[in-house]
Length: 105
Image (cartoon, rainbow, N blue to C red; front, side):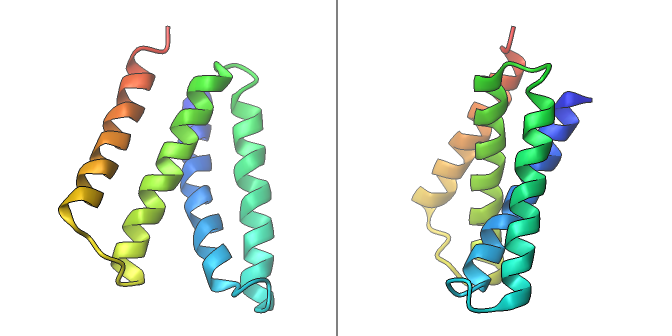
């Protein structure tokens, strides 16, 4: 259950990052509200998960999911570049996440 919370928190972290961009420096109210709510929810889910998981591994997985998801949304929704170097780097992050999860013990 705790790992499910970490993965969910990582997904909510993507919402947080996109909301940060769309808030335009906290000048758009509803995006700013979403930013605050998603940030609090993401941190809250992670905090609950690390009650039973190793904090280093859980945090690394959470940030990796957030980073990879945010890059994917940036490419898809904001027409950010999708060059080979960027895609390989994100693949390495995802491989690292899987490795951390597999070798947590």
